[in-house]
Length: 463
Ligand SMILES: *[C@@H]1O[C@H](CO)[C@@H](O)[C@H](O)[C@H]1NC(C)=O
Ligand SMILES: *[C@@H]1O[C@H](CO)[C@@H](O)[C@H](O)[C@H]1NC(C)=O
Ligand SMILES: *[C@@H]1O[C@H](CO)[C@@H](O)[C@H](O)[C@H]1NC(C)=O
Ligand SMILES: *[C@@H]1O[C@H](CO)[C@@H](O)[C@H](O)[C@H]1NC(C)=O
Ligand SMILES: *[C@@H]1O[C@H](CO)[C@@H](O)[C@H](O)[C@H]1NC(C)=O
Ligand SMILES: *[C@@H]1O[C@H](CO)[C@@H](O)[C@H](O)[C@H]1NC(C)=O
Ligand SMILES: *[C@@H]1O[C@H](CO)[C@@H](O)[C@H](O)[C@H]1NC(C)=O
Ligand SMILES: *[C@@H]1O[C@H](CO)[C@@H](O)[C@H](O)[C@H]1NC(C)=O
Image 1: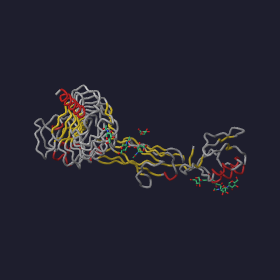
Image 2 (image 1 turned 90 degrees about the horizontal axis):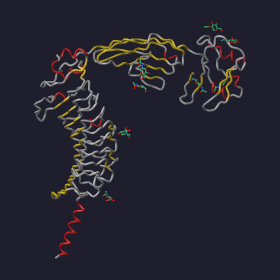
Image 3 (image 1 turned 180 degrees about the vertical axis):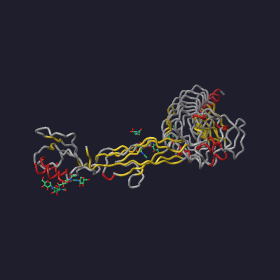
Image 4 (image 1 turned 90 degrees about the vertical axis):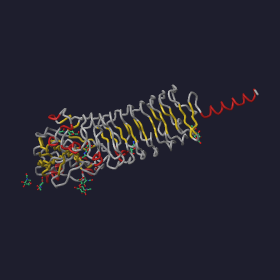
């Protein structure tokens, strides 16, 4: 009898130890297994969790990091709760084996970033709850595989932006919570494919505007009553510094109950209730070019900076048209900046002509031309060859002080005189020593210009 009791005890202990970690409760709700370890003072994920568990609750513990082995082989897991721990680090691919996971609760932890391989491969995940962390950085590819997501909660973090392109592809999404972050921009078209979206919360961010989207036509901005029909769409956007100009007119025109959103700008609407400002006051201002470069003459090869500044509401975009009528874009020689500055790093004679600055916004357009004259310099060919010649005295480097004057004869002059005023020595593939051997000062010399062919991009370079 004693033997039998002992035997039973051993059996039951063995079974218990095998399937249920210490302090946890394991419920077999045939055929499913739930492992319940909430509020057990755990410092890490117990290693001996039954790999067949379907539900795993680890909330309200003190877990600080998630390791690769923690959830290895848990292919049956459907619901994982890690809420209210102190998790600050998730090892890459820690969730990789969770191929059936539907819900992942990671809210109220200390995560600061989500990298590309944190949620990679989780194509069946429906609910991803990440609110109340300290997220500042979600990598651009971090949500690429989460195509089945129905609910995404990123509220109460420090996010300035999120991977909008991945959001755009989450066509099953019905709830998107982005409130209480620092988001200042939502790209147009983000929601256009999200036919199932019925709740979007962007409350308390730094948005000055929302992108118009057909989806919002169903909007019935979440009012205090909060009751919605299945086809309606709840949009909350209070607590943002709304810029109430013509770009927000579409939003103002949505029929809805009053709420407490206010305008932050323009100055004359500051503090006014969004829904009480009449439509006629949502105004834009066409661009006005306020400052621009007057006509400019520059030596060939020099850097040229053309500036153009405009004001308007919304902030006008500035584009440049080159003398031959083409829109100027970035190249190895030319940079155009958003602030209206056009930088020609190495000018050529072909840049001579009228550049046009075009400033535009939804309210209109303004033009201004800037005349640019590039003064031609004497051009010498095959200077590289000359430098490789044994006698550096035959260098064709000009010592002329008059640029753009009678150019055709300088080569002849220098060649003829053979006075070795300029000598090139120590030539290597990337450097050369250039010496100016003047017996006496030549009056009027203010600068030397060195012209050489760079093999890097095969263009003439001036210094
Ligand atoms: C997962 O399964 C593999 C192979 O079946 C095994 O080698 C490994 O030890 C398992 N890992 C864990 C943490 O159970
Ligand atoms: C993350 O993935 C995106 C594309 O999916 C890629 O462009 C980016 O460079 C990746 N970032 C890192 C740090 O690997
Ligand atoms: C051109 O390049 C500059 C510097 O890399 C960048 O700041 C600017 O935004 C670019 N312009 C365009 C139109 O891409
Ligand atoms: C425009 O931006 C460029 C690059 O950031 C800067 O070098 C330039 O000084 C700016 N120009 C003006 C007029 O602010
Ligand atoms: C360089 O110039 C010399 C004389 O001016 C000429 O004979 C030679 O063919 C030129 N070489 C090249 C590569 O142009
Ligand atoms: C040097 O550059 C000029 C102008 O681009 C070109 O005409 C000449 O053939 C080049 N010479 C060599 C040796 O590459
Ligand atoms: C250039 O030189 C030629 C003859 O050497 C002369 O006839 C002509 O006037 C000069 N041109 C200039 C712009 O000095
Ligand atoms: C260049 O100068 C030489 C002598 O210095 C002179 O003989 C020749 O006529 C000049 N050529 C031109 C085109 O001016």
